[in-house]
Length: 226
Length: 226
DNA sequence: CGCGGTGTTGAGACCTGTCAAGACGTGTGG
DNA sequence: CCACACGTCTTGACAGGTCTCAACACCGCG
Image 1 (cartoon, each protein chain N blue to C red):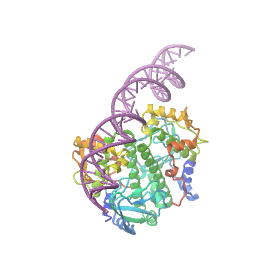
Image 2: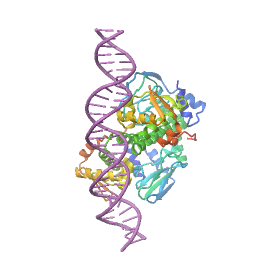
Image 3: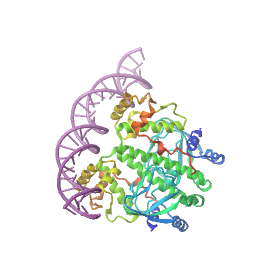
Image 4: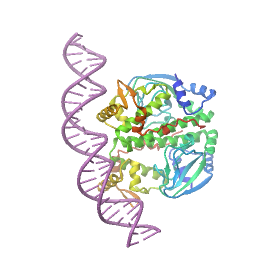
């Protein structure tokens, strides 16, 4: 179950057997959440982190993501995290992560790195919101998710499940639902991509990337010693 | 010189004598940059990080900020960093930071925490760009800088130096320079804040915070064990 | 069958961008 | 000292992207 997480790590860093074993020993519990459940409330004191195994959570967290790894050092979040779909998560107590920082410096750097990648994605969104039109932002989101879901093994030939409603999608993009609707129509009209029945189908990836001015540098997909 | 950085750390975490000594031993060099110099180019391979001691750098880095601490694990940046003013920095080789992760787990968690705070600030900006008007965004920027510069000892009674031109400010806020100009006039007209001669003067902080819907939770100013 | 959530469409308003021009200040060279 | 260039700030008129409000269609579900 946790393999999707290891896949995500290994897209950016090598993980040796000892490290893998430690990672696999991190969770103490597996918990399921119903759709629309508030999983983490902002301000709430945290002593554990949440590794998403199945389902989607707000802020576009997908399987394999450590949705509140930053909570390990922040000790509380300044935003809520909501289960967009029914979800299954692995619970990792902060004590274990603290132990990691004591015993596995390299793994610590790797997880530190992962939170920095999350931050880089948010920086890119900030740029996107400031400088791009709704069409380009939407296109970029589709491109980014195609890559991230591809790593998780959840995207095939430009098709992937996308469980957000247009209202939720609008919140992600800083738009209104009405404008999201019109933007989606425009993307379909141009033959780039379609979103129907909670599923994205990319017809013309190069053209979509061009509209989005997509450059995957900010996803840090190259392996380097960390 | 590095005291401004320690002040920033101590606003959020206790630092003991041994840790302080190690922090003070981190830099190997002090370097000056001229105004408008590109300090770090995106994509460039990094083996050192840059601790800003004096001056401002792009993305609103102020004295005390580790402008590319995330570069320690990312190994390259996806954006440039430019000296907005003449700057003085301390250079910290990644080897030393690597050593920190081996020998000082608590300090590692604290610096990890600091990059997560930077990320939280960017998340807040993302929200801001998506949901707030130009007026509210500008107001929030002034509020945030008042707090951050206050910690650095560079703000007094709501007055602080602010070296950005309106063009640069526009880039930060995702606006045009023309609209920044009009927004500044509106803020002044309302008696909230003024920006003249590269200096911000806040007349009515509570009202400014109200316009900005400012809540400093995302700056994580409370001390907790990390 | 009715209801709520979701998706779709239209009309008009508003915020912000674009383009263009001028004012002001500062430093440089003659 | 003046003339000039340049960056920055300011203002105006207009265009365009996005929002708001409202209404309606569709659909799964109780």
